[in-house]
Image (cartoon, rainbow, N blue to C red):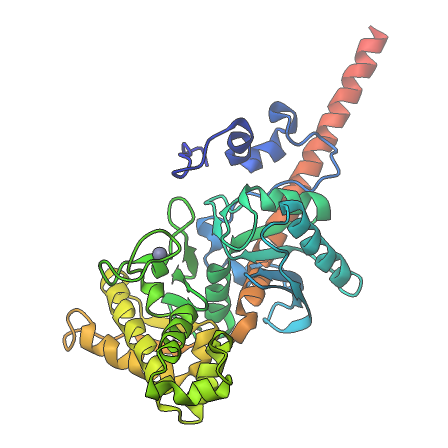
Length: 410
Ligand SMILES: [Zn+2]
């Protein structure tokens, strides 16, 4: 807990950031020393990061319903989830525009939770955010679809809602959900790949999410697979997600349609010539109906998926890859070619056990369910830490009272 904290590259260790990076548990134990959490403050105390004991701790975490929130690029989904992963109620709304201030996004989250708390007991709130979350899981360092830049999201929301809050990357929460309740159950070494507009990733080992030193592990989408390839919004060229994602699928289809290629006649007719209307789900739908170009495009995406998975197997050697995200709805049209390419590119093929490649089972709710389930871990910690805090305060108050009375009599 006392290890020196080196700020991630590009994040300035200003005073505010530094104090937040300090052990928040110490703030609970010695509230007056740091001055950030005065004794008797109504604000919910910030929580210590869930550490190595996360493993199996979900089994002893309280079996209480919690709220999970998934903040994606286009929508915010919030739901009450019980300890078995069942969704008791779900709400969704649009993600506030990037131009809006962080406060607007906060308001959206708070409103959703307050709405749900009218009908349910909310013991903790878990937030899965599409962005980089720091190792303390307090700050969102950067979110491509939102105005968050080094935003202390956990403390802000915990302060406003007065319940324990957990913040994590959305791919991590989705992986957690698949491991607990979905396609990855029983796997000790699991890698999750979510194919949405880009590629999200997460690593789970022995029931623990591997976040890396600075919290941003699992950004598989930006591994370079084609030197000098397509330009990626991240600034580099040839990133994996430029070849295996929803964006890649749509880009290729639109390119063929714009070139008026004979293979694209089917889809051009489908959108009545408006090439801008071509979407990923549309391509999947047409592929299911037997459109040759759409099938081929999904095969291409699937092949690149297999190549990337083989690279990840060389580095991480997991027993299972779970493929989620919107593009995974194409199912065998995508995962079939991925399995073939994986077998062709796997290092040591023929002489090693091959990882299983499975399609995610929880669908678009995975991120939300995982965030809620992870929040149960802090629900317990909150109670214990809070009890200690209250006990300490009472002891201190008795001592202060004793001193006052003895000084008065002297
Ligand atoms: Zn990139």
